[in-house]
Amino acid sequence: MGKHFGIIVWGIVFILININIGFIDILPNVVGYILITSAVSKLYDKTKIKEFHIATYVGSVCAVVRIITFFFFLSQNSEVTILSTAIGTIVQLLILVLGFYLYEAVIKLLEKEKVQLVEQIKSGRNFFLYVQLIASFVMTFSLNVAEGTAITMNFICACAMIITMIVWAVNMNTVRKYFNGQLNTEDANNYLE
View 1: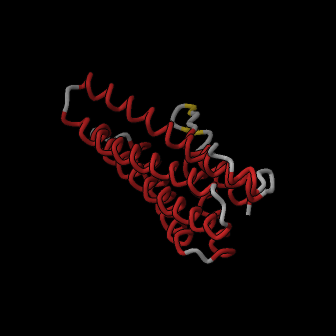
View 2: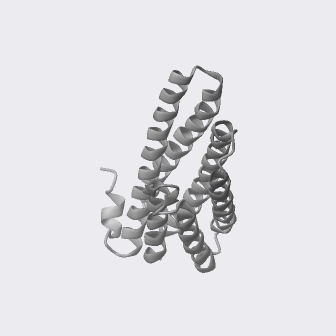
View 3: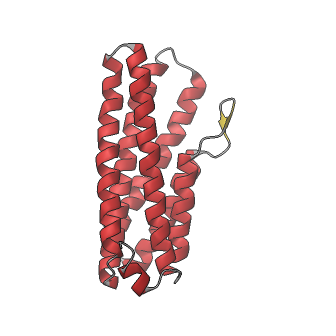
């Protein structure tokens, strides 16, 4: 199972890092969503935990939305600012749902293992959910303020979302280490100390 969590970490990296040459993203987000979706699908096949199954569908929706937005931005509409903020908010809410179901599935999986590592994952889930939700709403409200304030609000939201994605990746990497045997049960039980 560890290799599937490793693929999820790589998917998060693809979503997190944007390296653009003109309009072309060298590490397209859609690849990240496809990686996450394929890994989560395989985890569902192995565990039959329904939250993995739901996360598979949400990851697929994220991939489709990212493909649509890629072609939308190539068209360069005059309404790009408002629509890009709206689409950005929708994508962030989809990431929120994807992260929620993935965290819930991991928590159920670790509870079956009877490992205290589950407390760290629960803390990571709560941080991820609260910050992502607040940032999504603040980003939406930035349309109703002066341009300078909106830029500052969007920058702070972007930084907050990056931090939550890093926390998500670190948590999934910790789970990967546990299932790869790089973090034994005693280490996992003492991980919070």
